[in-house]
Amino acid sequence: MEPINGTDATPHASSRTPPMPHSSSRPRSSRAALIGICLGFFMILLDGSALNIALPSIRADIDGSMASLQWLVNIYTIPLASLLLTAGVLSDRIGARRVFISSLAGFTVASLVCALSPNLQLLILFRCIQGIFAAGVLPTTLAIIARTYPDPVERAKAITVWGATGGIALVAGPICGGLLTEALGWRSIFLINVPIGVLALRLAFRHIIETDRRDDDSFDWLGQFLAIGGLSLLVGGLIEAGERGWTHAVTLTLLLAAVTTLVAFVGVESRVAAPVLPPAMFQRAAFTASIANGFAFQFGAYGLQFMLAIFLQTQWGLDALSTGLFFVPFAALWTFATLVLNRIWAGRGMRWLLIVGSVLAAGGGVLCLSIGDQSTWPLLLAGTSVVGLGCGLFGPSCNGAAMAAADPHYAGLASGVLNTSRQVGMAIGVAMLGLCLVLSDPVAGARVGILLIVVCFVTIAMLSWRYVPSRGR
Image 1: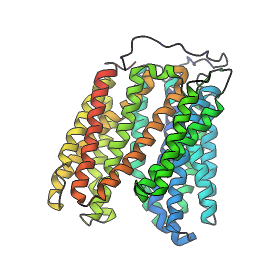
Image 2 (image 1 turned 180 degrees about the vertical axis):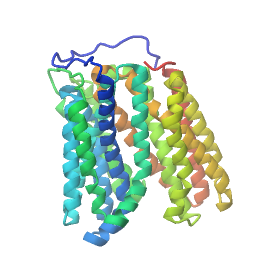
Image 3 (image 1 turned 90 degrees about the vertical axis):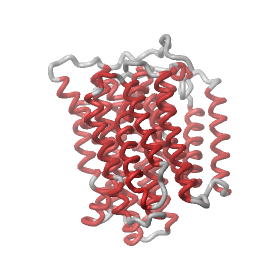
């Protein structure tokens, strides 16, 4: 890859694209639009992380095997990860606002049906439909932010708020899931989405402006089919690897089918006139590096949470509440860095935030290598806290750098590529780090996993130093 040294040819933008309003009310309307976007984003992530806490209650209420409950989780993740690219392409063609509103409405209705489901089969079906509509919400949020905030500094601040919303949702999910399940039952986890969704839709209708649209003459149906199939098989294989092991026949079959399908996808993309992933997107080195950073960020930051949560309960004998309390400093410093430090240091540029934050996170990971018996808890607590601080500092810039480097006419697709990379990074991280914990020596396995996480953070620092511009633009 080479640093950015020019511009790329862009497709013709639709003349139907509405102009950017220039009224005195626009700043207030922009803030209302951002609130609507963040509410939708928050609801998608909260729903995904809250369900795990409610699984035992669901099993007791409407019955079902453990395998069925696992599918209740996975049937949401697979369509979410596999349809992000398609949703990004669709938003570039018909407008991100239209896709966001229709997907958010579909997700809200599907949530209501989930809450009213009389049996596990119907719940699984509409959980899948939730995942489909969630894939339409995620990539459109960043595309709308890019359109709503053309000024790079204001856009960076908006993306920081967006990133903080995601971090808070992932941290709050298990807590809210537990409180709602205990107080009102598992159905409330889905029912709470209805008022949130209605409020987000009202704000979206009133304040979100439509994004640029591309008028291409052809559509790569085969490429879309292969992309969806390949990503579905890949995520499914990674999920099975975490549950069954890497050498299980089901895992190997799914991963082999995924590789075959994705190789076919690359072959098709090199021959069609309007590919799903235009090569011009990846000629911008800063964009490609930011996509790699998104993968490494999700692998390291969320992989660490996953691995340590299991380790603390299986090796140290902590209960779920004690494990959750152990991660409070991690979550608190992450939120502080995202909401406070990012705003204070925004003027230094995204490259600075990426490098400093990832170096901090890597240093925290090195402290975590001291993990052993329960007597090592002070160093482990300090290490995870520093990791949280670093991730909160550089996390929003992973998103901001990708959108700043992307061609504006491909904003929806760029967001789809970024979110796909992050979803795959999390799935691979969970599978690989879970494998580390089943080694004959769990402590050594945990240290191997933490070392992989440190490598991820160091990679982010190196890629950002080499390819990301010194000032976001």
